[in-house]
Length: 514
View 1 (cartoon, rainbow, N blue to C red):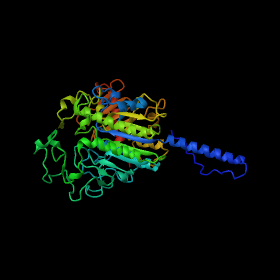
View 2: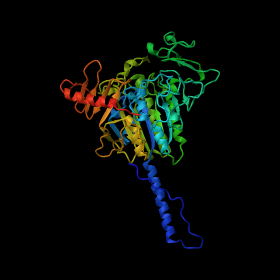
View 3: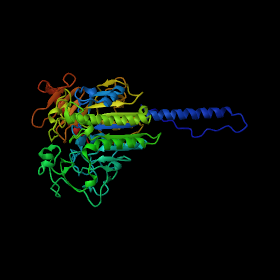
View 4: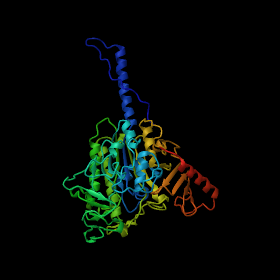
């Protein structure tokens, strides 16, 4: 927990020339030294924070969580040097609502329109909302996201040739370098702060999700131009030999090369770390593109796993983590930095793209023994790997079964940095800092509401019990303490418990939040 603030004594009275120092002078010097040491101790109790949010990594996709067909030495190292959580949840089983909840501490299902966002979506979080970034910025942190944003930009349909705001900078970040949506959606460009990177004004960008624009070929029309095959829903404008969701014209010089996305984001993340000033804490939010589709590993990673390109991009992701850890080590910041690695939802074996190695993908079970996949309310959809490391503060080599959600990071970080959140902020989040730091007996939160992509149906965790709503049939009930694979539906045997949990979920849904 954060220690009380101690004000630094700014001046100590120096002894006058040719006179013996007065005893009070020694006392003041000693007090100044004590204050300086206390201030340094306080700084160490308010760590730098690096939050790595992988995309589509499942509960079973890392070596430290049981994966056997891929090798994740850097993530395994993180787990050895910190704590590995076995009951952490993304709150939603798809990307956009998870990111909304993580940054705001508010369930995304409470706000219509927070499902998977198109590439031309407007900003889903209202400027002025207390966010994870704004809270840390108030605590004196330098803040920056580098990676996949996918929360919309602007108040109206964004013009990618002009300033793209409001966006991350209006939500508490000092600097931003990001992909607007996803790798399989247009526009296929990077944005730095408010502008598309490398855009030629003579070649303006136009994006449409409603109708065909321009004359660029589509994947359906010219499959011969594709480096990887795609299904009909991912077969619109071709960029870098890969067809996407949505249409795009222009911006040819600004378009990314998929094989280089991980390198670009990693370089930008390390550059953010390298330019931080000594003594000023920082918050790096690194929502990676890997391992979201299209999974196109850099050539140096191809063939390095036992399960095709999906496994190869897991290796690429682990490399990214290794580069960040090495940057912290190089600058002597590892001891003073809280590093958290997790994922925005569970994993899935998908066939939307065919890279030629699809038959090998399923050799690595994305979610281990858990039932379900990304997009579902079963555990495989939203239970995610969660590793935290802060040397000297978080026990090394520890495994925790505390229940927590990514939604809980905002109040937990506020407590860590001695910030008092204003009334109405993070209304659905719980301070789980004791569990994050490994306090004896800390169990995280008692209940947690989970969603897929929409406002309903939902699921409710209450202790070991889990209720899954069904709109066209009876609800499902599981005891995760004895049945983590959700193999035995107990609803018919325990109707009273189903009713009680359904009432609790209805009460949670009926709550009015800001």
